[in-house]
Image 1 (cartoon, rainbow, N blue to C red):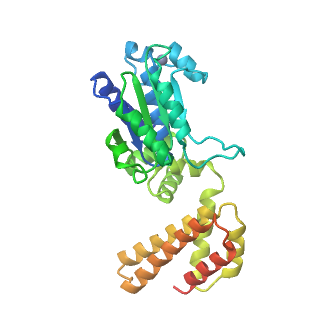
Image 2: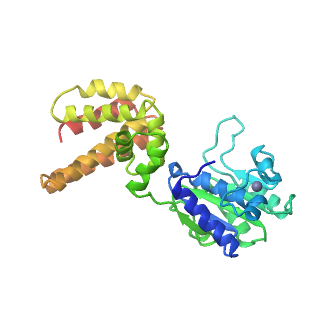
Image 3: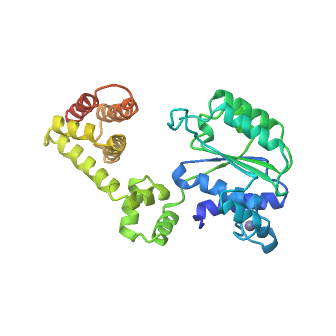
Amino acid sequence: MTLAPWQSSVLERSVQALAEGRLGHAQLLVGPPTLGTLETARALGEMLLCTGASEQGLSQACGRCKSCLLLAAGSHPDWHEITFEDNPQGKKRSEITVDQLRALRDKLQLSAQLGVAVVAVIHPADAMNHSAANTLLKTLEEPQPGRYLLLVADSLSRLSATIRSRCQRTEFRLPTSVASLQWLQEQGVDAARAGSALQAARGNPGLALEWLQDEEILPLREQVRTTLQALAVGKGKPEETAAKWADSSQLPMILEFAADYALEQQRAAIANGEATVKSATTIADWFDRANQTRKLLSTTVRKDLMIYELLLRWSSL
Ligand SMILES: [Zn+2]
């Protein structure tokens, strides 16, 4: 697998730390999943198990040794991935449970079957429930040589301070726009599309690429913006838009784009010196409401009514 430059720099630093005996047994990789935090953790885990890379001076797993072949086949006995499991009804759980962490603790007691190392990747680590986190903490407090725990999390805020303090932390930051544009072009995107997608994705090149590979997302964003623009000058019908949006399977994303647009308008008005304190506050308030509406979507509220109210408010700003 080819890693993006911001991913391989993380991997290189970790491999360097490993060579110098500074790599801690618990690593925490934090950042938006679209920046490839999980892919980087996996690449590091593969490197920890690979026997060919260090012999050949490679910066990534060799892909040819016994470990690498077993990993590729999905049957490496010393590799454990902990993520959402299905509940008894066959639906994906929304948290990582204590049973999963207990099972992992037991596996980490055993010695490495291939004699190299044992690697566990936990993702998203910030979705562990309280008791799962406590069990993990016990494991973290009893480090054993050759056992590595690689935690991948979207954000730090939901991880307890004690877990954070037991891990070596790498935070993924957005690459510079020059580096992002170059990478997008290397993925076969032309410069103009790369620029506008990167702007839409607020500087996140991984997200920009994801959106570019989906035929619907960027046009949908454009539609949301045009609709809000029209409503702001008294064109278009809030009821019709509300009904249409409420029906859309992309509703959460529509509301995210709408909130983004409001924020952008507010910033532009402030930058142009057009915003009064009152108008800036009203748009900020609308931004909050759009986000709250998005969070309420999974509840039993009438979506169309909620969106209608939101759009009416928008047209009167
Ligand atoms: Zn290998």
